[in-house]
Image 1: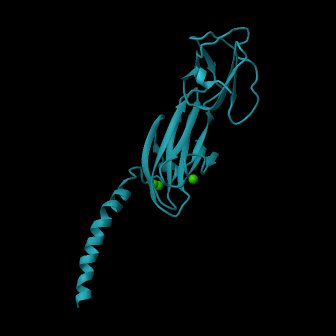
Image 2: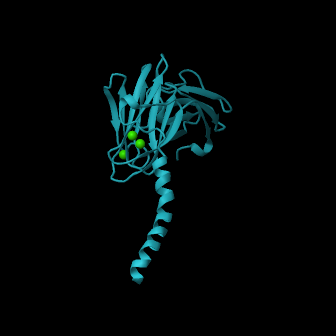
Image 3: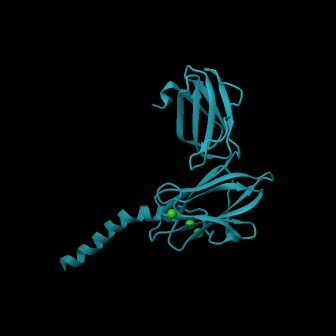
Length: 227
Ligand SMILES: [Ca+2]
Ligand SMILES: [Ca+2]
Ligand SMILES: [Ca+2]
């Protein structure tokens, strides 16, 4: 009898401990029902939504790109192992990703024409949990403003994508970049970029893996010199 009496007390305590978390998780996805393209939640650009996913769940979102199109970066965040797929207005899959983002998060990016697109978030693991979805519209040609703070005149300047490829042509051409002056480099898309400068003494300065999303600046100092 003593044991039987204890169970209800124990059960009540367990419920009190478990219920707030479970309720908060179930209520976390205000976008449901959104399991199909026709139920997709409209989402503005440059926005972030917090939602909840379980195995078997699919969360659809709808975005609209202005007529001129643009460069989009779509990513998930949080501890869940998510998958991302992108579809055009007719439902053709344009791309999908599993783990290119942070940890097990998904990341899709690229230049898209104007129009309506659909994003599907699904779950790769057997656990349920919260995630965030972020949609960033980025400039197709972000400007990197390089300030020469080395104390020396720069004669040659090169840029290349960090993922590979040659340095290409000297961006300065017949010009030189005096110390204290800036030079704007138009990059061929957001992403990781390497930069190399050569000064009047033929000393070089190389910066690897600058992550440029939007117009940015970099201050090149003597500390960047290659030894
Ligand atoms: Ca959901
Ligand atoms: Ca859903
Ligand atoms: Ca993943």
